[in-house]
Image 1 (spheres, helix red, strand yellow):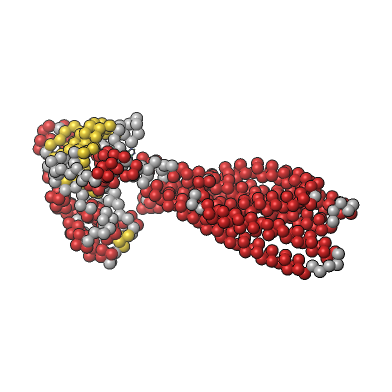
Image 2: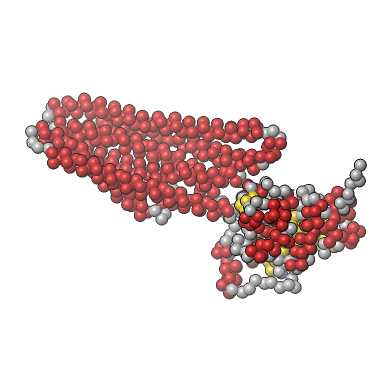
Length: 583
Ligand code: ADP
């Protein structure tokens, strides 16, 4: 946790000095009170002492306020630092980690866990430092006044400390449980809200509510458990100190009558003993809070330690090349993309691609066909370098992809997948996502190319019109065409297109064919083909069979040479769209 204070050490020093000053001012007060009692007992004027006491009160309050503000501001600073760090890492997460984690849970680490940690840093640290200093000072002064009385006090306080120590373990466990439950609530809620139409259609609102309800109950139970343990703690300390009070009153009173101490000594001692109550209980509360924060901190640390994609600076080969500032190896003799004997599995025990070899020439249309689950989308994922192959080579313009950063590889391609992601924002935001500074004329060009004019016309505000969350106010075909416009605006060398299967009507299908024709003039196209029209137009068709490339060629050639292709062609996937006879 110490690392959290990096960059905030000045604040800590300032706050500690202020706290120290405040504590000294506070601790001086009973001494002045003792003087007032003793001086007035002797019938002398005590007004100056009273004034001094008032000044002590005010300055103590002022230093307390400034010190607290410095620490609170530091707490906010720590949260800001953690949030920047977390967001930066989460957005660069390795795809495997992204697959493995639930995004709602990751989000809650940026929101809920950092908030809990802020409390720890700003509150618990103040309480711990102030409490410990005041308690130590009070104990030292009590030792000076009467060591015997202090020993009696110490015994009772030690008993309380033992109880507290045993409570802290439980608090930490309960709190970790609670933070995990809060993460699970966020993850489950995201699951349900992310697929609300499906939830509705299956009348599963109650089931989802119950599922999330269980998480809420778990968080509640863990919270109550923490509260129970935490609330026992302060009274335990208070009881111990009150017990000491009784002892001090009886024994101390006897010592005053026996003339071992003055009445002022007893008053000061009692004041110090009362000063112990607050600092000690705030020390114990702070330790409890720190225990709770540890769980949140662990979850944040875990997220910060997740593997992320290497940046340019982390790639020595690329750094060397950048220093020489050699232009990227773009030679139009080499194919824009080549896969050589590529093997890959999402898990080591189950290969999905087994020796895939294919080349995509410049300005040509290559179609990828194969049964569902054959590994077509996985090829896209490897080309986009979401995952690295287990063996084999991926080449861009004849050069190994590993000599380029992932960003450099991605700059050459654009992907339109089946999901056709639309983000919350305007239509223009969505189209210019790849190039936010694109010129208006360029935007108009891709709008026309992707045949989006009707959407622009219909949408209130045109290009500046807002699209709903995930674009759910649009049709599947419209989303697809927005994704195409976005891809074209990036002016890629290679467009990867997962051809929409179901949500294209005849008009859209013609539109798409036109777009693809236009696109193929400017860049290469690798398309996962589901329709006969696409494969018939393709310059090259590659057949993927259970993770292996088994044949490639043109439609007619493959009909004779590839049994898998024949089977695919005979199946529904590649059948030409025949209008149904009307009844
Ligand atoms: P296709 O696009 O040809 O239908 P995919 O490439 O999507 O096939 O899938 C190939 C295989 O890889 C399937 O068995 C699928 O279950 C598996 N798969 C796809 N994506 C993942 C992933 N992110 N994690 C684990 N397995 C995956």
